[in-house]
Length: 379
Ligand SMILES: NC(=O)c1ccc[n+]([C@@H]2O[C@H](COP(=O)([O-])OP(=O)(O)OC[C@H]3O[C@@H](n4cnc5c(N)ncnc54)[C@H](O)[C@@H]3O)[C@@H](O)[C@H]2O)c1
Image (cartoon, protein in one colour):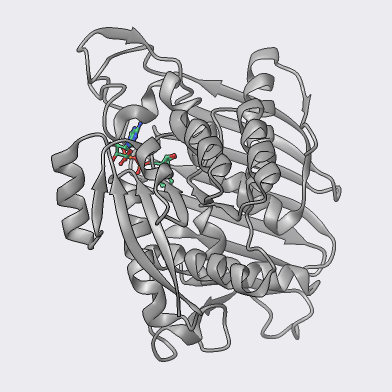
């Protein structure tokens, strides 16, 4: 087997999720490449060394430029906050590395475009970690839609709700809470949570033409975690928008971190002429499906337990009926990325797909300011 040497940047939430996927993928998916955890990179040497030790990385770097300069690294994995994605990805592309980048691709569409240009010029393999596409129930939804089971699509609705920033004492900046600092995150829930909903939506239902949105920042000032100083909050705490897809369907999207009681409630629903599909991250292995062409007496919503061997990804795991979870979506993404290298058919979402999502979030944020419908830039 060919080694595939990973250089991981960041040892936080996603550093762990990706490392877990890299460690598991060869145990469950037949591939011609053997993933090697070559180096972990973070600015704090002791913390990075502890992370490397826990996950089995062979070496440690404290400067991502040194990591990129290493000849024994094939793939640069960017699991660091949004404000460093572009600089790292562009440098990695110039060095000829394959790149896996966390979402959102850039701080905004203009920045993401520079990243797309860099990887396309360097012709390096690339992918964005929009992992929800690879939850088996969501992948099954894609199959049913592509088979035409729903017929003409009328509506798409999605929401992603959390409740962890209601307390005004939650700081902005620093580990984890960098999401509340606009200079690091780029935007609030629009680029963070809605980006996931938008990526899945465009994958399932095609491109989005126009949007009209509204955003709100409920807590206007927060202390900065690193300086202790109170600063104006520049992110959107809540965001909702209407959209028109190119296929003529209408959509509603909503996200907030102020929905008391909801921790990570990502739901989506699609209504078509012949049927509907619904999915909920809190019950992630189930796909709800209604087929209007079923016989009238027994017609109704079916709750499909997506755990059988002929359902997406499941033959690689346990026996039928046994569920898998959140972390497996990352394993699937690595498996598909590597399978794409081997088949010559690159796995999606590419950087260009990530750019398309950034263009939608740009248009939503613009509309929230102008109060008008805004066109989404075409990629
Ligand atoms: N796909 C998903 O579902 C998902 C979920 C969470 C986060 N994310 C994305 O993943 C990225 C990281 O988020 P997270 O939740 O892991 O954040 P985190 O705060 O848990 O971890 C970030 C890591 O990046 C490191 N870092 C920061 N600046 C760095 C630099 N200049 N050089 C090297 N390392 C640096 C930090 O030390 C930390 O280890 C973000 O882009 C975020 O939007 C995606």
